[in-house]
Amino acid sequence: MYTQSALAAGDSRSRRRRRVLGGIVAAVVVLACLGAGLIWYGSGGHTKGRTDAKAVAQAPDAIRETVEKAPVSPEGQTVVKHEENGLTGNKQRLAPGTWATGKILARAVADHIEGYRIEPHPDWDAKTWSLQLDGHVCATSRDVTADGRTAVVVQPARAKSSGKNGVCDEVVMVDLDTGKKLWQKKMPSADFAYVTNTNIALTQGVVAIAWDLGSVAYDMADGKQLWNTTVASSQCHDNGYAGGRALLALVKCGEWEDTTYRVEKLDPRTGKTLWRYSVSKGIKQVYLPSADPPVLAVEAGDYAITDLITLDSGTGEEQARISMTKYEPQCSDDMYFGIVAKCYGMVVGRDRIFVMSKDGDDIAKPQNKITAFDVKKGTAVATFEGRMAQSVLPVRMNGDDLIIYRKSLDAIQPSAVVDWNLRTNKETPYLLFQLPEDDTQIDNPDESDIIYEQGRVFFAHRSLEQDDVHSKDPVLSVIGVGTAGLLQH
Image 1 (cartoon, rainbow, N blue to C red):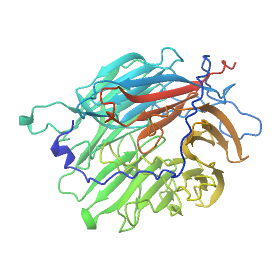
Image 2 (spheres, one colour):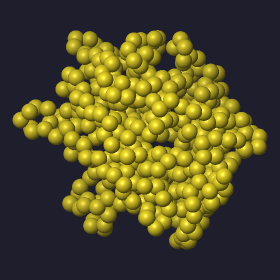
Image 3 (cartoon, rainbow, N blue to C red):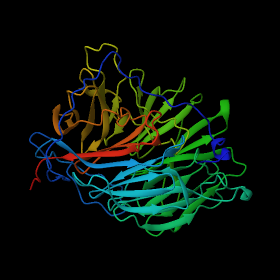
Image 4 (tube, rainbow, N blue to C red):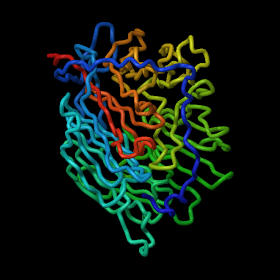
C-alpha cells in the first residue's frame, strides 16, 4: 500500500519477537461461554487498603487518564469481535491504531477508521460508523482526549506523476464516539513526510507532528496552526514527539555513526524550548516512553534497550539510570508508523516505572515478572511475579496502581486482567477469560495492541494477513472482553 519512496525513507530493522516458552503443549479443553449480562465500568473509588489516586474531572482537551474500579464479577464475556474479509491473494492490511471509549472500539485499518459498538453477545460485530480517509493512515497516537477525540496522519492518494505519491501530509482530528471528522489540515512543507518517519503526539489541547525534515503543531479544538519548523541546512531536526501531560521532542543531529540525540521539553502552544538534555554520544537509538515524568529508553550497544534514564520534569536534569539487562521494555523498532513513544513492555506512572522482565528458562518457575522502579532514585521497590506458563505484561496505570494482563499458555488456566497495588502488594482480579485458541498472536504485544478502558480489555492485530491454509476465511481483527457480572451501583 505504501510506495517504494516511502519504504526507502527509513531503516529496515527486523521486528523483535518475544521468545515463546517451549515444551508446553496446549490442552484441548475449551471453556464454555459465560452467560450474558450487563457491562459495568467505573472511573473512581477505592477498595480497602488502597492508596491509588481518585478520578478527577478533566478538561475536554486533556489527555484521558481514567481510574478503574473492580467489577462485581470478573467473569468475562465477548463484547466486540470483528473479522476482516477480502484478504485473499496474499493481501495485507496494516492496522496502526486502536482506541476505546465507553461506547466505541475504533480501529484505523488501511485508508479508513471504523467504530464498533461495545456490547455483549449476540451483536459482537456491530459497526456503527466508518470514516473514509483520503488515503492510508501513516501515523497514530495512543493518546485520547478526555472527551474522546484523537488525530491521525494520512497519506492521500496521488498520481505517480505528481512525484508526491508517497507523502504523508494530512492530519485529521476524529471524534471516536461518532466517527465525525472534526477538522483536516494539509501539513506545510511536508514533502519528505513518509510512513517511516512521521510521528504524532497529543497534549494540552495541541496536536504535534514531526517528520525529520519539519514539524507542525495545531490547536486541537479547531485545527488552527500554532507553529511549525522547516529543516534546511541544519544538521538537527525533531525526530518525533511524546505527548500526554507534557510535550517532549527527540532531536536527532547528524547521520549514521555521527548521530547524536538530545531531548527537549517544549511549550506545546509556541514550540519554545523550556529545557534540553543532551544524550551521551554513541547511543544508537532513543525512545520516549513518557513525557511527564520524562523517561528515556536508550540503546547503548546492539539494537536493544540497555538503560532507562529519568529526568527532572522542571529542569531536565538527569535523576537516575536503570539498567535493562534483565528486562524487556519492548520499545518498537517497527519500520512503520513512528517509533518514538512506543514501548510495549513498560508503563510509566507519576513516581514509578513498571518494566517486565525477560522470560525465564525454568518452566517450573514463573515465566517472568514486572518490577516497579522509583522514578527519582532508579531503585527497584516492588515486584509482581508471573506464574508458571503465565507471563505478565504491564498495560496502563490505574491511579497509582498498575493494570496487568496475565497471559495463559494453556486452555485450563484463564487469562486475566488484574489490578496491582504495589504499596500493599494486593492483586485484584478485574477480568477472567479465554481467547480464541486458533489465534495465538492476538495477545502478543509484538503483534497486537492491548488496551484496557472502562472495564473492558481489547486485543487488536496491527497487521491483518490471510491464513495460508484457510486463505478465503475472514481474519480476526479485534476482540474485546467485558464483565459478565451485573452493573454495580
